[in-house]
Image (cartoon, rainbow, N blue to C red):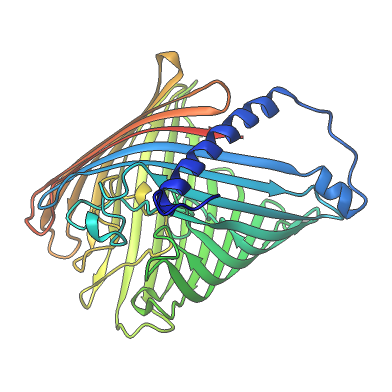
Length: 420
C-alpha cells in the first residue's frame, strides 16, 4: 500500500479493504464451486498446512438509530474476516483469523466514543478496526478437547458467556478451554479467561479486560424431559472491577410432543450472584427466567418472563453475555438498572413463503424493585438464505418509554452476510 500526502492513509485503507473484500467474495464463490475429494489424514506439518481450509466471512450492514436527545446515527459498515485452519495432525490443529471493519462515513455515528466528530450522534458499537480476531491451538480425541489461545466461546444460550456475534467486531477470549464428554450424555466445560477482547476494539479504554476468571459448566442431556445444566462463573477483571462477580446457577430446557406436529417447549433458570475478586461492591441478588410455548412445523409462539434482581442499588450483572439477544434489540438494558429489571415478553417465529423466516418479540419492562413501568418494545426480523452462502436480513426495534429515565429508541438494520 502506497502512502500519499494528498491521499490520507485511512482513505487508502478503506478503498483497499473494500477491493480486497470484493476479491475475496469472487475467490470464495469459485472455491465453493469445486468440492474436492477428502484427502488422507496428514502425516506431517507440510501436509497439515496443504490440506488446511480457508474461511471467509463478510457482512455488509446499514444501521440507523433514532434516539431521544441525540442526532440520528447512520452506519454503513463492512466487516470482513479471513481465516485459515490447518488439517489435524495427530489430533492437533491451528486456527488463525484476521478481521477488518470499515465504515463509509465513520463520523455519521458515534463509535462508542472513539470518534469526537460523531459524539453528538447515537451510538453504534461497530468501531473501525483491524485486528487479530482468533488464533488458537486445539487438540481433540474421542472424548475431550483442549483449546489454547484467542477464541470464540459460547455456553448454553449465551445469556452469561457469549461471542456477541450480532456486533460487527465479535467478542473473543484469550483463554484455555477444556471440554470433556467421557461421561455418557454429559458435557463438562472448564475455561480460564486471561483476557476479554470486547466489541469496542483494542483502541477503546474498555476494549480489553484483564481477566483472572474461571468458568465451569456441566450439561446433561440424559433426561427424557430435557437438558439440565449447572454452572459456576467466577469473573474477575482488574480494569473493570465493578463487573467482577461470582454467579452460580442451573437451568432446565426441553420439549414434549403434544400431537403431530405440535410440541410444548419450556425453559427455566435460576441463579444467584454476589461480588467477587477485584469488586469493591457489597451485594447479593438473583436471576430467574421462565418460558413456555407451543411449536409447530413452521411456526411457534411462547410467553416468558426474565427477572434480574437488585441489592444495595446494584443490578444483576451479565458482563460477558451476548446481550443483544436479551431484553430487547434496542439495547437499552446492556447493563441492568440499579433497581433491577423485569422483562415480560411474547416471542413468535414462523417460516413464511419464499423461505423467509420471521422472528418477533413484544416486551414489557418494569423495575424489579418497586415495579415501576419502564417501557415497551416491539422487535421484528425477516431473513432469507440464498445462493447457498448468502443471507439477507432486515431487522427493526422500537422502544417506547414509560419513564423519563430512559430514551425512546428506534433502530433499523439491513444487511447481507456471506460465509465460506
